[in-house]
Structure formats: structure tokens, C-alpha cells
Length: 325
Image 1 (cartoon, rainbow, N blue to C red):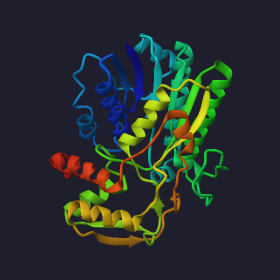
Image 2: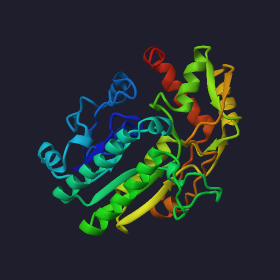
Image 3: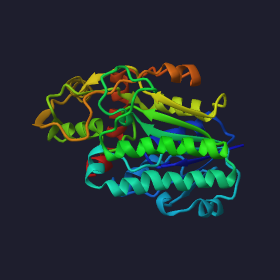
Image 4: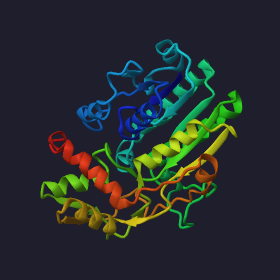
């Protein structure tokens, strides 16, 4: 029986990972920590975990990692743990500019406490959710993991700090630390503050969507099942003890192209309100995924139109809740 600690398990990526783990094996126990941050409605997070919340093998702890020490965590979770998958974080580039201290507390102090817990419990495997935002503005496309990093938002700086903090614990305490740089993950359960969710909701309601810039910015959109495939590879990886790995799709889509694709998926025409570019936003993200392929056997295979259809089906099935939030 494998026992995994997954932080942020009631969130978008965390809940999809937990579902995949339970579907892949009956020999799995999962403890998740989530503080149900009011960044978005708790009802949506409860929806995310509805399918497995009643399982005997699932345990939910409502705790804030920023104020829960490693020793306190060890008392709360006395059982052995095979791997930690740390997905919990305060997310969002623009909000981090408005309130940078809260991002330091959640994303750095929270990670520090969890690393102390791993040291206390002698847990070998630690998988950390980093972000493509650490690359900042960089035109050496596609981005390789050894690029010079120049983050341009407090959120991005906390993710880079997290990678380096993991390296410290790897060197000092022999922890295997795998930092995964996610690239614009989307799909069923996506957070309501992210573009695909926001645009779909507004278009179904006949409301305008806000577009920052001229629509030429582009992102490496990665379907959540593909991202989860990469996380699963990291959970089982044991050939080295410190790695930083991109999990993207190796394919960029402009904002204009994305809006057109959502129009096709929903059958609705977007009403666009154009605004200036926002501070902290980068013009383009584009992942080189050759390292993930080599280390994890990672092969993203979801086309944008297929991923959007799966997101749309999830949204429509839960629109009574999602449209009012």
C-alpha cells in the first residue's frame, strides 16, 4: 500500500492527480492538506473532491502550511509516507503584485514547513509544483531548464525560491527533490480565475471578456491529464536526487487563437473588451520537454480542441454552481 501526501488536493491539479492515483491502483492511500483559501469558492473545491471524499483510503486535513510546523505535521500524520507531492500554493501573477507578502508566507514558509516535515519523517521523495513563470521574459524558445531565469512577478520569484530551497534540503538531508515547471494547465476543474474558465463562463452568459494587449501573447497550454502523467512519472522517478523538469505541451497558442477555439467549442461569439498589457505578464511561454520525455517517459498527447471540449463538458455539467461563482 503506497501512502502519498498531496498538498492542495482539493484544487484543480491536485484533485485530478488524486483521481488518477485512485483509478490506477487499489493499493493507494492519500492524505491531502488544503486550507481552502478563499481565492475562489470552497464549493468548487468540494466539487473537485466529491468523487473520492468518502473513500476509506482518503484523508483530508484542513490546515494552513504557512502556520503549521514540520513537527506539528508529523503529529497530525504519524503514518509512514512514500512521497510528498506539494501542489498547494498561492497562485496568480497579478494578485501577487498587489499582495507580495502573502505569497512569501504561503509559497515559501509553507514549503519550508513541509520540507521540515519530510526531514522529520525521513521521507525520500518530494515532488514540487514550480511554474513556467520563473523564466520571465526570455526569447530563447523553446525554453530549456538551464536557461537564465529572470522572474518578473512576486509569484514567479516565490517559485524560483522554492526550487532553490528544495536544492538546499537535497544537499543537507539527502532528500530527492523534483521541481516540475508547469505550463498553463487547463481542463476539467480549472480554477475560475484562469483565462479558459473565465472566457467560457463570460461567453455562455453573453458577457464581454477582458483581453490584455492585442491578443498576440501566446502560451504553451497543457491539458491537465498530460500534466498529471508527468507528475506520476516524477513520483516514481529514482535515478537521480535533484532535477528541474518542464511539463508543457511543446506547442504555443496565441490568445487570439485560443479565443477562436473557445468560440468553436461553445458555439458562442466572444465580446471582447481590450485593455493594455498587464505588469508581470510575459509575452510568450514555450516549453522544451525533451528532459521530461527522457526522465519520465512524458508524452503529452491532448490537442487543444479535444482538451477544450472536455473542459466545456465539465463546465456545462456543473454550470449551476459555476455560473453563480
